[in-house]
Image 1 (spheres, rainbow, N blue to C red):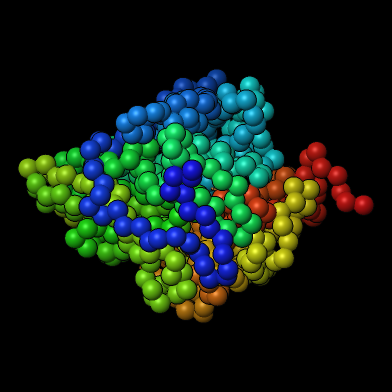
Image 2 (cartoon, rainbow, N blue to C red):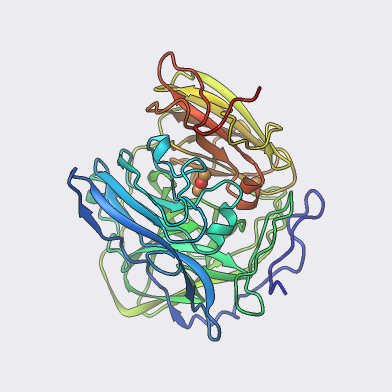
Length: 487
Ligand code: C2O
Ligand code: CU
């Protein structure tokens, strides 16, 4: 059996077949939240910080009874948290210990396309790959995951993913909670479906479907976790690492919290809210205040009908995710700084090129991803505005490699506060027009593309993806290596 996996598909507008799930009060919260280890590094001969990442198969015990066959990085499920500073040269020895090829992509990172770990940088079984670049972007919560064309969903579903935290000198004086695992807590939120053997249920994604939606929620690989709070303020670095599920985060007592950072880094100022949407691939840093001795649960609430999500009314689940247990006395400050970073500033820039992207039927602008076709080239140093629309009844989002973008407008109006910081992935509410401004900073190789795609993994694998290159002056769009131009 498929043990709780929901078969999706159906007609337009039907996101979700099967019963609405409500796990509130049914989650035991009897396991301490696992905190991914910080990746160790060594100073290499070139001065770069060198990390070794071994991708390997294994078994993980998520609950009593049988272990589940999983994949992990330097472990059996998920991978260590990588931390590096802006300005630092980094190098990775990525060893593939699986018996099939895979890749590791650095989601949200500005770096040369040949280091990006996308579908053109696969690592064969038993082989190693050694990407290196210099971190050149503000402090942010980024992440890494496989990105091989057609199998991204399966490789991530088995457990390959981890966080990549960038630090810089702008964020440090702010005195935000920053003790890793104590008051600065990574939370990789994923759903999984278990079969009768307690293995991850998998199914071929149906064309036009969302893929697997599981009914068990894992945080850092822990089902039903609790976290012991010892400080007045806790920063949560939330990542929606699920294949397709949308989360509408909030706390069980509807307390307000402060959104301080989105995909690409700090907001200009904290935004107080009691609910926050994250679609697959998106991150948010929030700061939550606690009182001594209290218990409160982080949940996902049904999508707002007719509200912010318009027609996305299939997401009716109410899910318990993690319980926070505050100690009898709490240390530290209770104030979140009123000013955080610099607001994205592309609105007044001269626009070199506008493009439009319509997502429908698992294609973008009526085309499916082709490894041998670079869809267009952009010019180094220029600002472009991409207008993106979800033109059918399924959930989609939009992710662009190499850059962080600014959401200029949504349907001509100002974006909601949670879309006012730097983003690399944005949820596309059906029918709305999103205008995204981005600056392409460095040309790389006219033959080596970056990707743009829907981050619902079944859609991406099905071809809802395209390729672009960043060109220097006078350069022309090339042909990806190992590919041949169509006659
Ligand atoms: Cu998270 Cu193209 O990737
Ligand atoms: Cu999609």
